Image (cartoon, rainbow, N blue to C red; front, top):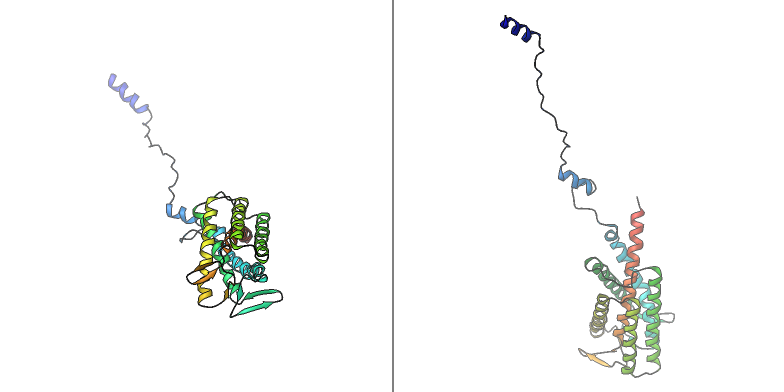
Length: 258
C-alpha cells in the first residue's frame, strides 16, 4: 500500500526545474587603439597640432614682415644723427638713411628673438608682464622708440660716451622692470644685448655695410659703440609682446576657421 502511494505522489508532482546560470551584464571592452584613434581625430597618425603651434608659420611671417618694415624706421633714428654711416649698398628713402641689407637683417632679428620667446613659453613658462595684449604691445613699442630717441639726442648733444652709457644702462634696467619683470626675460634681454653688437662685426669687417665714426670700444679690430647694447636690450620686451600678440591673434583666427 505504501509503495502504491509513493508511486502516485511521484507521478503527480511536477518535474523539477532546471536552474539556468545567471547572466551577468558586462559592458563590451573598448579597443584602446580605437579609443586613441578617435581621440586624435579619427586618424592613425600623430595628434593634430594645437592651434597655437599651428599658427607658428603665420607668426613667423608676421615677425619677419614687422622687422622688415618697422625695423629700418626705428634704426633710422640713429642714422639721422650720424651714429652709423652706411657704406656699400646705402639707401636713401626721403629722410630715412639705411642699407639694402638692413630690412632683411632686422626681419631675421625680429623673427629669431620672437620665436625664442614663444619656444621658452612652452618649455619654461614665466611670470612676465609682457603678455602680448594690444595695449602692452603698443606701450612697449612707444617705450622702445622713446629710448632710441633719447640715445640719439644724447649722442647729437655731445654727451660723453661713458656718461651716456651709464644713463642708458640704468634706464634699460627700469624699462625691463616696467615692461617685463621676469628673470628669464632679463636673461634673454642680456643675451640679445650682448650677441647682437658682436653679430655686427662681420657685417662691418667683411661687407663694409656700415661703420661707427665715434666708436668708443674696439672688438676684434672693429669699432663699436658700447651703449648700443642697451637698445637691443630694450628691444627684447617689445619683441616678446609682439610675438605673443601675433600668436594669440593668429591662433584665434585659425581656430575660428571650419
